[in-house]
Image 1 (cartoon, rainbow over the protein chains, first blue to last red):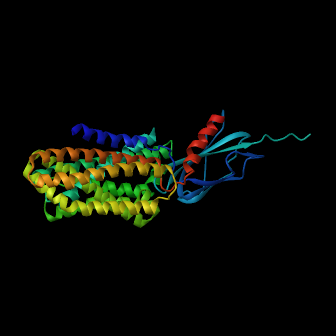
Image 2: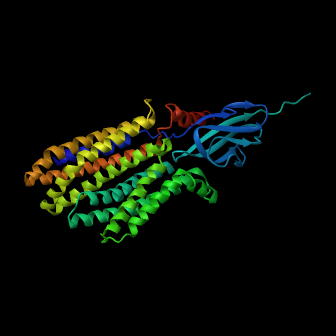
Image 3: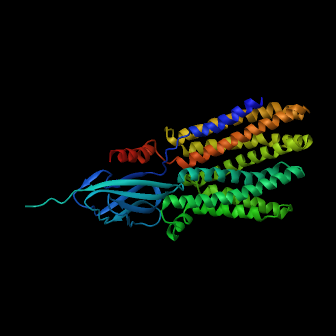
Length: 123
Length: 294
């Protein structure tokens, strides 16, 4: 009887390990420019739109061989859409990484990969 | 790594809330003997301490997830959010339960204990997946947690009574059996309302995790029905052997309840009812694929 009891208990505990660990909460519905965009020059602004209101807590740009650079954004309080004005992306591939606090209280992260083309020489 | 620690902190928080709130409710409803009352008071104090520690740890881990630097800006972001409001209520309720004299038992003390438990339960109205959906979903979640907590604490009290005295155990089992059908019915209705309110019929990671939780809950209900309709009847009829079997069956229920708490912690840490079926793919798998490309 007690062996059966422990079997049932262990089955219950083991079942929890079969759970999905894909982390995803309040998500981004769109960004402008879209991730993967090829741009002629650095965009005037980057906007991030969430499905629900969230609080953006950090945005930074990463480029190979260069130190990470923090970007400022508006608004600073809870909103569904955030704007990063004049991100000044250098030529080449840049990864803009953001972190936000979702309305259900979780840290959500994402990134936007943008490539700025080198200026063409005019003869 | 931070998310794994976050899930553990969340499981610890659920255990702390279930012990502290459940202990207060079980003490008020089961009319326990002096020994069981002492055990419930200890459960409440340990639960309150666990709630305090897990709340602070959860907030710290969230801040570390949100920013590389722990500064006033990130602290105020968390404190001014729903998470901050829920944490404030849990800390207030937990502290109140912890500073209450263990032996105090007049009407004022009982009122204070109830108020403290209500503060902790109110945190579910302000923070969490249900609260993010609507005020009423938060209220239903608080009711769901209150009944589940009562159930867990009542099982701990009955387990202790089974070990101490057959007479006290029988009295406690009789009292529990008269309340349990209504309480568990309320728990199931609140759970169903939450699922109906929060969950879309899409195969999201949240729904998969919820299914695991519901399977374990189903097993608990089967064990609980066996306890109630077979073992309890034998215990009340004076079968001494049945009391030992009931204690073992309570151990199973408690182990399965721990599994439910862990399942809920994993479900609420890693997934959300507010994500669409493809959000997990978009936020986790696609960045990984991009990383593999470069």
